[in-house]
Length: 510
Image (cartoon, rainbow, N blue to C red; front, top):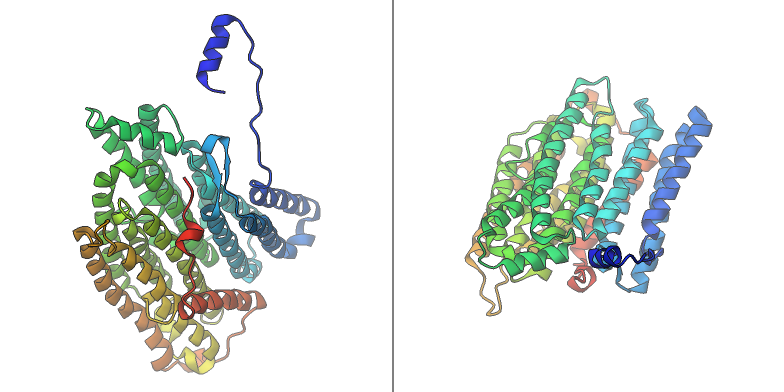
C-alpha cells in the first residue's frame, strides 16, 4: 500500500482494507525447496544425531539438486516474473545465476564429503550453514531492491564467517574467521551508509526508482553527495569481491579456512558479490557512468596487476590461488568500465566469466584437496613429479591451470575473450574508447604474468622429479572423482565447443 491512500484514509476517517500482494509461488520455488530441504535435514540431524552423520553430505547435495528442478522448469517456461512491484525479478538472467550457485554448491559438497568426515568436524552444522548461505545467493540473483540485496548479502556472508573458523583448534582457521568477519562487517557498514544516502535521495529502495531519481537530479547541487553514495556502495561490494586495495582479508582467510570452504569462498561467494555489484551498477547507476567507469577502471587495473604480481611470489598453492582469485576479480570487473554504452555485453561477459571461473577454480581446488591427502602439504614443491604417480590428477590440473591462464582451447580463453570483446566494443560508431583499449592492454599484459605462475605449477608436476616417499599412488574418494569429472567437462566443453551463455539468455529484463 502506498503512503497516499493511507494519508487520505486517515483524513477522511475511512478504513482501507489491506490487500495481500500476489505471490507467484512458482517463482519462489527454488528458494522454498532449498529452505524446506534444509529444515528437513536439520530435523533429521536432531533426531538421528551421530547415527545419521554420514548421510549429511549426500542429503545436502540432494537438496541442491532438488532446488535445480524448479530452476529448470522456470527456464523452460521462459516467462519473466516480476514480484513486489519490481523489487524481486525472476528472469533468464536470475535463473542462470541460480543454476550456477546451486551447481557450484553441489561440487563444494562433493569436495567437503571426505574432508569433513575424516577431519572429525561437525558435519551437519557445516552443511546447514552452507545451505543458508546458498539460499542468500538465490535471493541475491533476483533482488532488485536495496533491502533485499542487503539481507541476501548478509545471509550468504554470516554463515561463511562461521565456516571459515570451522577448524576451531587451528589458530590459522581462527584467524581466518576473525579477519573475514571483521572486514566483512566493516564492508557492510560502508555499503549500508552508501545505501542509506541513496534512499535519502530517492525516497525508495527499489533500484529502478533510484535510477530515475538520480537521473532527474541533473546538475543539482546535491550531485557531489550522490557521487559519494555511489562510491561508498561500490566500495562495500569491492570488499566482498576482494578487489584491490580491499583484498587484504582474502589470502589469510583462504589459507586458514578448510580447503573446501576456501573453494566455496573463492567461487560461489565471490560470484554472489559480483552479481550484487553488477545488478546495482547497471540497474541503479545508469546515469552515473561518468563516475562509475573511471573508478572501475582504477579498481580493475589495480586488482589484476597487484593480484598477479603477488601471486608470482607465492610458494603455497592455496595462497597462490587466493591471489590468483584477486587477479581474476580484476578481469571480471573490467567490462563495467564500458557499461555506459555496452551494458548488455558487459553483463554477458561477466556472467560468462563467472560460469567458467567456477568450473576451473573448483576443479583446481579439487586437485589440491586430492593431492594433499597424500602429501599433507600445500607447498607448490609438493606437486613435484606428480605425473609419475598420479597421471590422471596431473592431466586434470594441467587443464585447469591452462584454463586459468587463458590458454586455448580450455574454457578460460573464452572467458577472457568475452572480456576483451566488451572492452573493445565502442559506442554507436563502433570505435573503442580510450578507457576500454587501455584496460584491454593492461589485461593482456597481466595474462602473461598469470601464465608464469600457473605454468610454474605445471612444470613442477611434469618436469621435476619427485622424492621416493612421495612416489606412491594417491587414493581418490568417489566424491572427489565426481567433482573432478563435473568441473573437467564444463571447463573443456566451454573452451572446445565455444559454448557460453548468450546475451539473449542472460540479459535481465529491467
